[in-house]
Structures are given as structure tokens and as C-alpha cells.
Length: 127
Image (tube, rainbow, N blue to C red; front, side, top):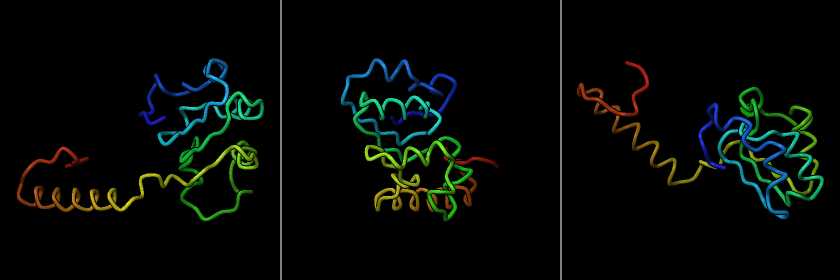
């Protein structure tokens, strides 16, 4: 998955979703944790309906992802998933490539110059 989180996508991958996927599917979620029902994910991984899953996100990740911690500090449902051989979790770093960092720096610097000159930038959040 790589889709925004909104009312239509929240819980999109629920038990009904997993029941309908082709057995042996591998799920990648690099978007938002709340798109996937984690209990349904766990059930599908344990049953073999879902072959594997790699997530760069987790539900409510802002509560725990930006901290140094042990697996024991993660929410219980995430701890159980990390014990499975067919589940991989990274700490929301999929964006962290040389190209992405270069683009972010260039965009920020270009926008700073544009704003300093009194211009408008589509990336502006507050004025």
C-alpha cells in the first residue's frame, strides 16, 4: 500500500480484504498503519493466507516510533507480529534515500528563497 489515510482508506485491509486475496500474497505497507486492521493481518499471516508482510509503518506510530526502545516497549499486537518469521517492520524510514534527502533539502532551500522574496510556494503550511 501507498495511499493517503482518510475515511475511505482507514481499515481498508480488514478481514474481508484478507479473505479475498490470493493465497501466497505478500503485503507491503509504506503508507499509514491505520490502513490495515492489524488483528486481521496477524490472523492472515498465521493462517498462511498472507505469505508475508513488510511494514514501514504501524498504527499510532507517533506514540512509539521516534524513540529508542526495545521490542518489549512496542504495543502488544506489534510485539506479536515481530515474533513472526513472515513479518518485517522498519521504523518509517522507507523515504530515507539519498535522492529523497537531496530533494527535500533543495525544496526547502528553494522555498525559503521564494518566501524571502515575497513569493508563494505550494509547500507553504502557514503564513
